[in-house]
Image (cartoon, rainbow, N blue to C red; front, side):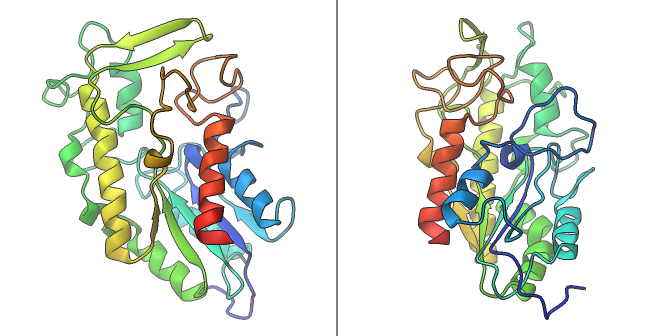
Length: 275
């Protein structure tokens, strides 16, 4: 149980790789490294707490709401042990969902996508769900999302009563209406999967579920997809990393925000919820 005498920290970050956003192939599994250009760093700098004990960042690559590994519950517990929640806490961010299994699926979108996107023979088209190559996006609903994060939100709200709790959406990787998905290799070799509609629909459903869950739980929702619109993968000015792409971010985690994309998200959270 939280120590109610503690003041808490100004900023608490709970999330997956889209919050941690660092790629170190040599790091150990579960090391939970965090990127120096990730949006929580940008946000903490704007809030004037970067590098101090007034920020608690528990985001981790591979984290999920409750499916496996480093879950939202574990991150919340660890943040609580570090004295993160209290009356001084201004902002608590949550960014989860892509690493979870939904419905009866035995794999997450993130795991499934990495296989079907690069499968030019079968792809991620309308038949991908029936063939078992992708989970059924219809299982992702606002009600189910809200139910899965409700306990953590209730706990945070009780022990950090003055905090703005912000559910941070995912940035635009692919436009919501497109049927293809693509990725740049080395900045000069574009890869296109022409049968990618099911992947796009999955991101559409995640976005809608997060929005509806935030409304149901009466917390904030940052529509990161809207503020990064037009800057997805293979757009003229991408704010998402390809693979070893020097024109965007050669060291960036593929399919994740570039430093520019993270700057936009961090500034938006600051302007709307942390001033």
